[in-house]
Length: 97
Image (tube, rainbow, N blue to C red; front, side):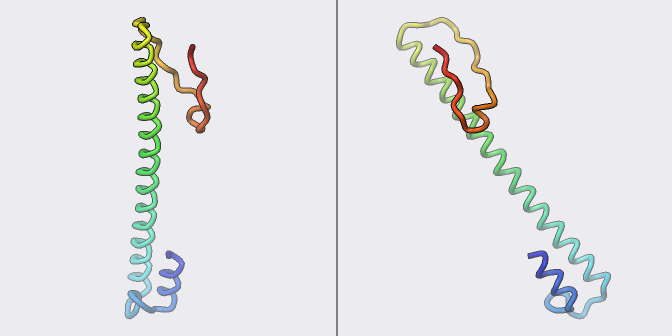
């Protein structure tokens, strides 16, 4: 998309028609900056969504373990579950007995 805008500016066509070189370059910089910011914001939103989903899955697993222990009559407090590298990579964490 940026390439097409640069070509249009070089050929003085489209929105770059009847402007001087400085105005065209400022317009191109603004366009490229807004495209870059949009990509960065979208990447941040997707990353945050993935992280939140992983945290929710971990919390649901902890809750299910706690309910299962309570159903068997085990009312001792459990140690908090540690996050390990395999979980972050999509692998399974080792289960506690």
